[in-house]
Image (cartoon, rainbow, N blue to C red; front, side):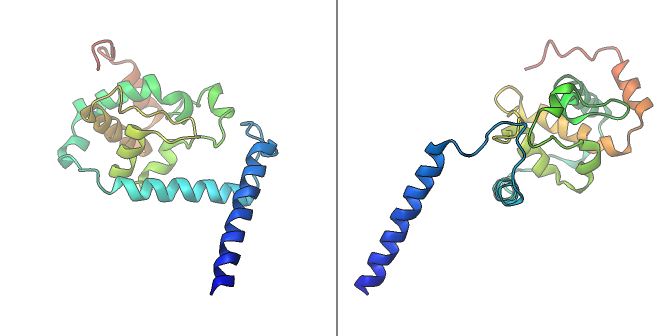
Length: 179
């Protein structure tokens, strides 16, 4: 039994030393232009997805009418158009230059939100995601505003470029009185 314990402790010490050697060696390329191996990509993606999945279930959904309310969707549009379109694109608009330099590349939301729960979108928008370029909007926006962004984002897959442009041209899209 003592040999097993010594073996386990020795392996733990070796693993810790190997980890520290890896960290301090600088061998891992942190440049956003560097592509990760499939193993590193899997580790990072799985860690991110499992972390988000573990946390968003505690989010309380608002009344479903929020997602059909045109005023709420307009509020969400104003925020999305101001803060999100540069990385995530919009119908008829390509994402901005910054998107090309992010690793991982941000998803085009109109392509992925149909299969993403409202609670998960809320959690991501509110809390952000480390090491992805996705900021946390919770420190600067109320839950009500974040739900408005979720409502708008959920409308994106069915929105035409003409509908998006019409929203852009609406009067009153100024967010200067926002939180």
